[in-house]
Image (cartoon, rainbow over all chains, first blue to last red; front, side):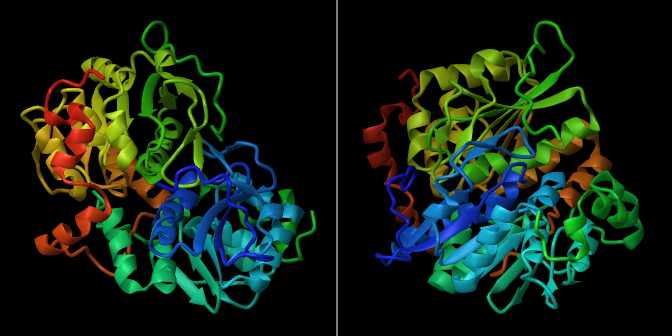
Length: 246
Length: 246
């Protein structure tokens, strides 16, 4: 079991052949946004040991999430300067703060330059957009946050995931599982990605069936999650489409 | 955001009206097993503040999982003596060790006596079975571990979840999301559970379609996860159907 691989050197960029898959963390994220794809992609190094999965934060401190559980990074951003791929999870209010965190944005932007893939989950797309990576692109995000991604220059498309070049944005929270299975198929092939799907027994049966996407329903429920675009931008000016520099 | 509710007293049993939903943790668990249902049920206290979500372990130490991420409990077992419901996640090798952990089994068994529901995810069913809770019952678990649950007295049924009285067993890893949405509908009603589903945008599109459950495929792949029943029981005698007393 690769449970506690704390001794990995993270030296892909300078010395070794290790291809690091870096999950970017920050305080207040939605844990399923990260753990869904992390569970999927954690199987990749078992299939191809040239990959390594890391959880990268500004520091190694245990971080609060938007649920009661706390998560501990395995590496700092500095430890993982040249990831093969990055996954950026989202959240609710705290994601909007993270979109103004210069250190985080700089890491995402720099990683994206050389990474083979950049994946966001849910409102992680807001971080990608704030880092300038979605301007003029189609993208998806959590349905309740579409206008914020659009305000940063992207065009929202309501799909489970949207792939444009090296950038894969996925829809809200649970969609990171689907997107990560797609990434896994790129890394180790479809046949092995199917084995990963079998491993996590991803054969969903949502007990209430598919979601009802009626616009009236969404409009009525959106205020449970957030304020209007104007309210959010008043609190966080970096969400208005200017390059984020907190 | 109820992110870091470390001050909750866990006094449901003695003084307060708080109904605690306790996620049981132990070293080496599969993080998606816990985080899927945790994300779902973390919405319940927002809807009905008489509920509280806690993550309960033997101690408050940060725990390794079977992926690189580590999780921190919010409470100890002693802090949560009388949970309203418990959720027991699973794992791979370490779950088989956890099934011999007397302190864990005693907590699960004692909680089950008074809890309104007991839910397992994946091989968490092996812990329920080792605690004597599944004897003579239908149950589900991760497909690759069905015989181990049967060896402890249950009848395996390949369903997304199986509800028998207060006990809800769910299939492998990702099935905890489906099962928790069902539990949520019991706690706050179907309409609000649908809102939770919308919140986590659980409208799955597995990129390779449904799983192929052909028995030959499963038989060929099972050794990727574990040894035979005889091999596992030789290493861990408490899996052979006797009441577990490590």
